[in-house]
Image (cartoon, rainbow, N blue to C red; front, side, top):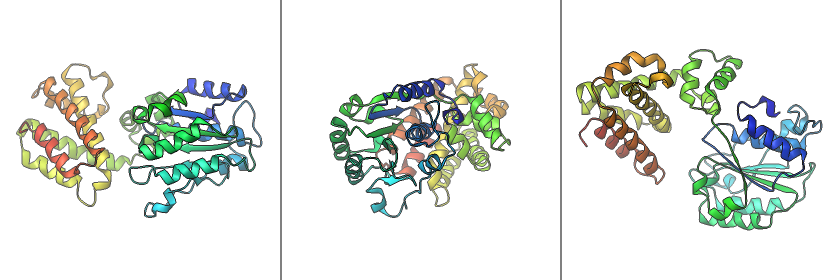
Length: 343
């Protein structure tokens, strides 16, 4: 049920109104930052059309149809062919497409085009979710566009993205956009506590930055260990100008044990630098790492806000470079050299 989803009350009301009025578009675009619940909302929307016990314009979440609709089996990451087709849930009228590595394959979009024209097997409509839709290349986008131009009446396609600007304008124009807001920190903390994860829930909720999925999946022990490493790097840069220690951190970020969590490490570093900037301009009311305020204040006396701001810009540049597959080790080295003031 929509009531079970945290945050975005306006979106809930809008979707329920569309369902009640029988005006759910054949093409929807769910936009908003990563992991704030867009995919769960899409599945909940599908349940409203599939539920055997539906009431008040939403699924019950408990009947066999609702349960099957939300049960997906992840494709094998080592088998490309499993990403070349729609991945159906245990309900034959709900399917999803996800990227293979960094791209959505054109073969999967063509399979969706074929499946979308089949009539529903047991529901009022079929639902297809394209997760990380901005990962479509031109070929995949053009293939999808053919379906969106003449959408089958009995199928609905939901595109999910945190980067809508990367979608073709013609695709965006054929979808009704639903914008999702970050989930309030208090709601995230409440959800975490409800699941029994009370240890460091305040820090976890703040670091999630409005992303419920991020908060739930965060390994607190990993976060605290990695944060200490990143804090040590900042102290080495600001208090000692120790480029050797910084490059050692960059090396650890890219070793076999840590390469799969490189992006998480950058996120943690960014949260510390942002907090340092807030402290330096006397705006510490919204710190993520609030338990580290004393250490942040010590560092802030040894650096100017303008320099800290430049570091945040460097991190944004690094993220853009990662999108075009730049060497991560070189990118991390360059970032830490800049932070050390040797760039």
